[in-house]
Length: 220
Image (cartoon, rainbow, N blue to C red):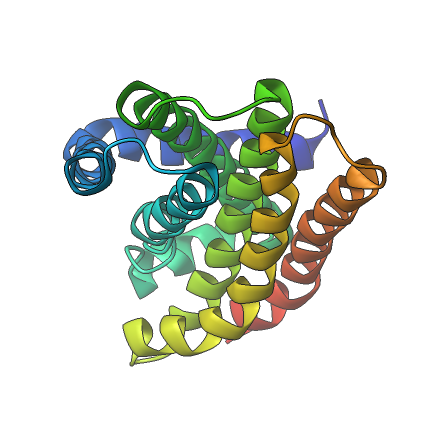
């Protein structure tokens, strides 16, 4: 294992340790997801497939905001200076992206299980939807991790997150909704895998932008 990889692993373990010591944040997020889906169940019962799909991504969006947006906001200037002395900017941001992606994968899986339990299973292609949900949750985690890094340098952090996040996340949500809606049909349409490839490319593009731009924020 290279020195750079060891730094990424060490920083990743640090985030895992902090998360395990603050388990109330994770369980609070699970409570938020479960309560939201339960309220949807009380209001709609078992909704139609289109509504089921839209509600799933709405819950995923707000879960990502609550789970990922705090990534850089909880680090003080002194702690950031310490990280600056022991690690490079690229290693630091990659560790953050990796941790938040795994966290969102867990949240996505739990959200899907709660949806299936309370709102029924209208999916005709379950595995394909699981694939899209994992790719989508990973993309959401990448976007909000990158936005949190930018907002951490500003005083109006919450407002800046909302202003920057809206034009970035809406196209991705529209693409996710369109791709995942096909999994409710009886037959997967031609070109579906090409759209999945576009989604993967978007995730890779966000990671590339974070690697390129974060060092400039790091020097500030």
